[in-house]
Length: 164
Image 1 (cartoon, rainbow, N blue to C red):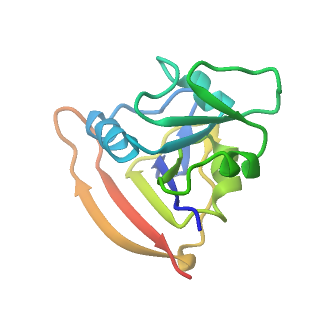
Image 2: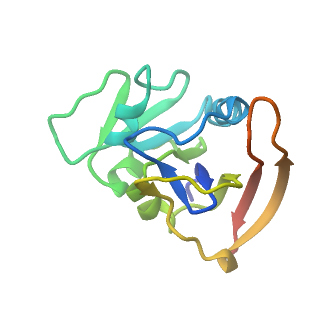
């Protein structure tokens, strides 16, 4: 069985992005994302890839799901469906689903772990994380952060495992 994890930062109202950009900047969360995903596989949709400031994420296998068979992105494996992306994934590595909204929704049923950064504030967004049935998941770790001079709102790192 593949080791599939969803990693996402989500507002109180489930917003995750607007105009193909993140809604906030939490430096420590970006560092955590890099630490968790380095050496593994990241799967994303084309719009998420387009939002990356420097193209493919270094030291990770980047798989981009697209509908256009002519799309080619440097240092990326192209996939044309959820199943194709999974077939092209190494079973020995953790697979991180990194967005966007429709990709998260489609992968939710396959995921066995959720790395959720919950931002304790609502934001205006045009992309949202799908509702999860909390009865299907067990919270295994939670770390809370209060507002400080760098981040003006509270947030939490939550890790969930899917119940079998």
